[in-house]
Length: 160
Image (cartoon, rainbow, N blue to C red; front, top):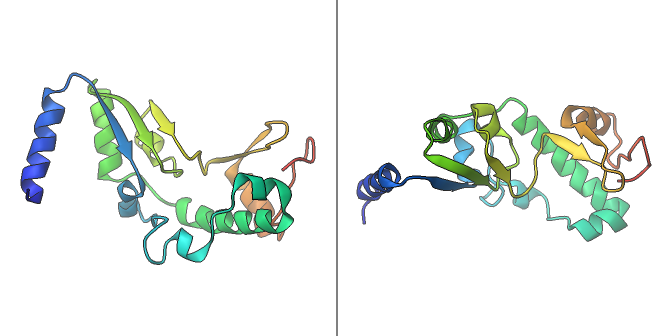
């Protein structure tokens, strides 16, 4: 089936549906200047995945993780919602879109005005201590990372 026909089918399905749920990934934010994780030159070409267990047990793994986050912050801080983000917001506004599930961590769906967003992989907008749950805006953690501390700890409990 050709592209135009598939688009027309999707439009008709949305038009006829009472309520829909959307599922988005990196492709929806590439137009906003955010590279996806898997394409050549993407994040996983430059960094490996640090598992939660590694993060908890290894200073080197935390340093690797925070180095990646430091780079991502710079890419995401000036990104703005694009036409796709705005289209989902409009679908929600008119009562068609019940929920938006995203793999993205950039917060652009919320910046566009979407309210009912589930972020499967968390967010790049804040950092949370895994021990006590204290939360910081990511800008504060970025300042710590840029000062040279690539393994920051919680100022309340010294946790990660």
